[in-house]
Structures are given as C-alpha cells and as structure tokens.
Amino acid sequence: MRHAAKDVDDARIIAAKSFPEGSGKFLQQEHSYFERNEGQVDSEVQYLNHGKDYSLFLTRTGVTVVLPETGRKAADRTTSQYFRLRFEGANPGAEIAGIERLPGTSNYFSGSDPKQWRTRIPQFGRVRYSNLYPGVDLIFYFRDGQLEYDVVAAPGADASAVRLKVERANADLTPDGDVAIKLGAKEVVRLRKPHSYQDGEPGRAVETKYSLGGDEISFALGPYDRRRAVTIDPALAFASVVTSNCIPYSGSVCCEDSIGDLTADNTGVYLTGSTYATTFPATSGSSTVTTTSSLPQTFITKIDPTGTHVLFTAFLAASGGSSIAVDPSGNVYLTGYALTGIAASLPAFPLTQGVFSGTVPSNAIGSAAYAAKLSANGSTIVYSTLLEQLVPSGTPTANYQFVTPVKVAVDASGALYITGTAQQNTISRILSVWQGVPTTIGAFQTTPGSMFVMKLNPNATGLDYATYIDGTLSLGGSAPVGVAVDGNGDAFVAGTVAGSNFPTTPGAYRTSNPDPSYYQAFATELNPTGTAQVYSTLFGAGTENTLAAGMGLIHKGEWF
Image (tube, rainbow, N blue to C red):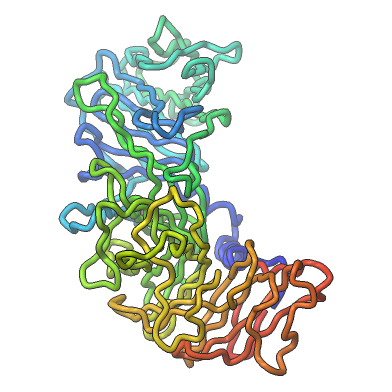
C-alpha cells in the first residue's frame, strides 16, 4: 500500500500515457460535439451541446444559451438563467444539418420504461445553417475546446445582412470591439471581435467589427472582393464569474458538475460523475419559462486512446456516479447515489426488471445507493438496481443508515464488488424507507458498522454477500478508498479507520491501534464468500494520523 496516491490519479496516469499530446486533451473533448435532437429535449431544438459551464440549443429561429443559476434558493430552481440570439429577418426554412460525423453517440436513460430511453444519438463536429440569409451560411463548431461560429457569405452575398437579436439579456460594445452579454449586472458571455478573411493565396484579411443597435448585433465589413466568398470568424467566451450557488436537493449532493472517478483500458478512458446539464427553457412560440430539472444526472463518457474523439456519452437521470469499472469485454459498471421520492414531473432514475431492488415507492424520500451495468457501446442498460431495500414496518428511525458507495471492482464472472460507508441516521426529521446495508446470513460482520463490502451477482438479481468490515466502534471519517478482486474471488479493501475495534487477524503487521483518537490505514482481504477475513492489518505509528488515499492490486499478495 502507498500513501497519498488515489486510484483516480493512477487512472489519470494511464490516461496521460494514452494521450501523447497532453493529458488534459481528453477533458476538453468531453463536451466538444453537437447532438442531433432525437427526442431527448424539446422538439423545437435541432441540435444541442452540453458544455462544461453551459448548455447550447440550436433552433430554427436562433441560439439559446442556458447558464448556471446564481444566488437562487432551491425552492426557486424552476427557472434557469438563459438568453437567446435570435436570427432576425432570417430564412425560416433554412436547412440545418450536422456535418463532420463523429464516432461517438449519446444515450439518455430516464425512468424505468425503455420506450422513453433515447440511445445511439449521433454526434457531430459542426452544425451548418445553409442559406440562413441569401447566400449566407452559419456554421457552429469547436476549436481547441472553445465554441465558435463562422458566417460564410458566398460570392456576391451580403454578409452584413446577418442580424442577431439579443433576448433576455443586455449587450454592450466594449472598447476592444467585443460584445459583452450580461444577465443583470454580470457578464456571462463575450462575443470576441471577429476575424474575417477571404480564401486565396495567401488568404486576405478583411477588417470587420460589430455594429450594435439597441439589442441587435450585426457585422460591419471593410472593403473586400465581393467576387469571392468571405468568412467572418468570431468566438464565444463564457465568463468565469458565472457560478452556481444552489442548495442541494435534500441536502445530499453538490450543485455543480464533477468527475467522481475514471478508469482506462486499451480501448480508451472512462469517466463518471454528476452533471447539472439543463433542459431547453421554453416551448415554441412562447416566452414563458418552463420548469427545468434541478436534479443531477450520472454521466458516463468514454474517450478514445488518442484523446481525439468521444466514443459515447450516457446519462442516468436523477443520480450521481461515484465509481466506474470495466470488464475485459468493455462492459461498464457503475455505482453512485440515486435520488428517490422526487416530483412526478421530474425525470426518475432508470431501474430494470428482475433485479435485487428495483422498486421505488412514492414515499421513498432522499437517496439510495445504486449499481448499474452498461453495454460496451453505452447504448444499453444491462441492469440497474438499488443496493438498499425497504425498511420493515415498525423499524425505528434511529436504525436507518445513509449508504454511500465509494468504489467498485468487477471479477471475471461479471460479479460486482462495491465498498462504501454507512452512516447512522440520527436526524429524526429525515424520513426514509430504506434500510441500511442488507447483510447476508453468515457474513463476516452483520452487526452494523460504518464500512461495508457487497458482492452483487452477475445478473444483479441478488447479493452473493454483504458484510460490514470495520467492527462497531469506528469513528466518523473512517472510509474505504479502494476495492480490488483477484482470480480466486477474494476481495481486497483498503482505507482509513479510527477507533479501537477494527478487526485484524492474528500475526498481522499491526493488530491494534495504539491511540484510537488517531486514524490508521488498513488493508483487508475477504474470502470469496465474504464469511471470513484471509488477513487484515493496520498501518501507521499510532502517534499520528496515517491516511490511505488509494490502492491497487498487481496480483494476489502484492499491493501498492
């Protein structure tokens, strides 16, 4: 075991080796594509992009940009900050097409009815509005991860005919020649001063600046050869001052996009986490703001080994991903939290039939741990199940637990191993119908503790075993940081624990904690049935905190 090295960092090292041009490249690529709308959003939308700090919706009449809300309370999160750039005087019948087809697809899983899922949605590098104005096309694309658009005027066409009306925001011309778009007093987007050119040898620059009349933006071009095409090339820069101050749903999750975990194999890099990507904020022909989901979604993204392309992105509604694993066939395994007891008008977490725990009653308020398996192309949920079950009638609230998955591993048979924490619910005002860790008969430890290991069978129809691993007196802050499994089905778990009752095996490196007020790192090996420890030891001097941050298993008996 080593200290201060996380599994996620190990995966980043693998990712960096896969991307010779820079390990940050794949993070840029994560959002750099357009999806065709195939029912995942309002029918008015033709193409969309969920960027890191925004969502962009391309419609026949213009562009809608949705941004994180600022300073709103949770109860007010029925609206979103957004503005539109409407194409004034444009051709309503302009052809809108995705070009530069990318290898990736997008997949949306919301609710438990597969008929409502939207899968294998194609992704494109560019979207082109053809003949939006007479002889003038508009093209949206990404360059180095930044959203840009080109206005391309054919020979003889008038590029100055393009007019973008700013709606629901204010526009100011800056001394540098940019257009600053503000929501209230805050600048949220800046349209950089355009660079224009004509094709030729060499290319000829054309002096161009924005013309701002009230809420309308147009382009003023200097002299150029109208017998040749001209391209106006501005960029959209999203201001960093836009942040989300929302209050988490049920007080349990953050209101910002985050990466929970990543892993890699020889076919690419896989990421999971949570995102607050928003929906389209208004219906066609209406200025009324519609309800926008304030709930997170688990995202799963696979990027190719060169860091050039997103191979797929999938979203699981009303949830957040905390860990990810991949089997030799490329199937993807996840764990995280699923929100329950949400309003019927909001998207629900997808659950499949015949699984260990696949029913959510209407009074199931809060969240529950989940596990899911996706096909190698991300377009099919093989299974999705909760890892908690209903509290038997009459069970005291004090016996409830908050079960939080931390890490997963998968064995050769497809069985999934999940480790995490279980914290006692001592807040009587929080109601839940979920019981704690569903320990199995004969498990190593059935008395409630604060850390657990579960083994979910390959079909997710039941638990092969579920056990606590830390005794009964570990203190707050104790947590596992990794789980691995060997070819025999032994589960290896590492983490940090405090207290005096952590179970160790005779003859282990350290069998007790000299000072229970300090944290110790631990390593535990469970047998294939979860009924006994093969070995278990603590690490650390006992006179200071020794914290485990990650683990890996080379082969049986060798840790790092």
